[in-house]
Structure formats: structure tokens, C-alpha cells
View 1 (tube, rainbow, N blue to C red):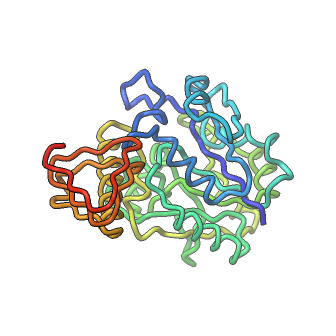
View 2 (view 1 turned 30 degrees about the vertical axis):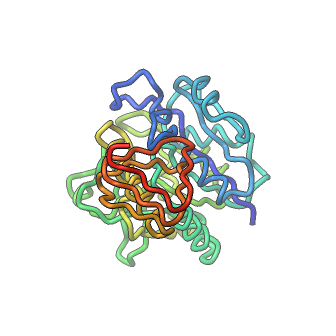
Length: 296
């Protein structure tokens, strides 16, 4: 089955307090959106669709070739954003996977697991959830008496009882493509914000008697969404830890990993020793058996 990826990258990112589009803020030496593109190329079968809007020309220039850009001229919500991709994708894919470019920590293993669950169950929608005490603005997954997901309620629309739900919508979906495109036309603007929510498709699928499946991630950090510079720093710390752990497992000694900064593009040979305070960036290459001294 052919999988197409849609990356949502049209938003301004008001809470970043920046003139730079949110998805272009650097994360460990790369634009944040680069991580989403890496995933799309690893999991998808077609060039990824990137929905652009705010400062679209800047985003296009940073992303470059190898993708299909679709412009959302008015930012009217996630459902509206995906509507814009119909002309580019209709009839070309069996599964449409959607996620946002401000979630750079998701792993390809999780996306593969989501897709496998989707195809194995024959679901119309398969979504990723996370159990967490801090909702960080995520929508809540509402389940029926039988335990099946029946709706997603955005935080701004949620009742106090719904806000107490700890199962959160992570904003990553697999859709049956043949059902998706006509279903999007049935979305209606939300009462409070006037936006078309992609999450309302869960309720539509339930009303249609369709199967909705949920895959819950066991590593909450990977669905950390970046909406502020505080979130960006948190994501940077995760990327840094993952990078350092991968290097140590490959045979590199880091004397004090928490005091060493290495960007993911850096290559280091085995039996190299790196002392605290070192900072290795960009396309740096270090051979085998080297020593990088303190504060180098």
C-alpha cells in the first residue's frame, strides 16, 4: 500500500516571539522542519507534501527540492490545511499520514508502528496518543464505554471534565485516503475559533461506523511539540542526549556527556575520547583514536 506524508508547516508560531517562521528555528544546527522531512523520506513512498503559509517563500527556500509544496493562504486550521493537499494526492496513495513540522522528536520506528497498526486493523483512522499529566495544549482523546476512541476534543473546546483526561492526542495520524478526501468536505468550523479541526474527523468516522484505532507511545518525549523557545530548548536537550548516547554506543568515550555538545551531523570514529566542554558542530569529522581536549 502506498503511503503519502503531509507535513503541516503553515503556522506563524506566535508564541516563539520571532520574525522567523517557527519551523525554521535551528534545532541542533538544522532547521526544525529538517527532522520532519527526514522522517517523511524514511517512511513515505512519495515525495512529502509540505503545507506552507506564513512566510512561505522563506520556508520553501530552506527546504529546497525533493518535496511538493502546497500553500494554505489562510490559516483556517489543521483540517483546512490538509484539504489543500487533495489536488496533489488524490488517487495517488492508499494511506495518508499527517503530522506537524513542530514535532521534531518523533522517531521513524513510531511512525512505522503506527502504519503497521493501521494496515493490520483495517482502520479508517489510526492516531498516536500519549499519557501525560501536563497536557501542553494537546487535545483530549475521548473514549466510549467500550474503551474505543470516539472523539478528540481540542483543549480550547473542552469541558472541565474533558480537560481532566490524561490521554492526549499527539497529532500524528494515518488515514484511509479514499475516505479522507470526501470526509474533509464535511468538516465545519469550530464554534470558538472558526477553524476546521482535523481532529473532528475522528467523530465523523465514528458516526460513519468506521474503525478508529489508537497507538499510544511509550516515550512521551518524542511527541514534545515546540511552541515556545522553552520547548525548543527542551527539544535541543533531547537531541543532544540521543546524539551522545549513539556515539557512546558506537565506541566513542564521552567523559561527561552532559557537559559536551555534539550536533547530530558530526561523525566521530571509535576509540576517540572527548573531554568536557568540547563543542563539535556542523559537518565536523573526527577520526578513530583521537582525543578532543577540554573546551575545544
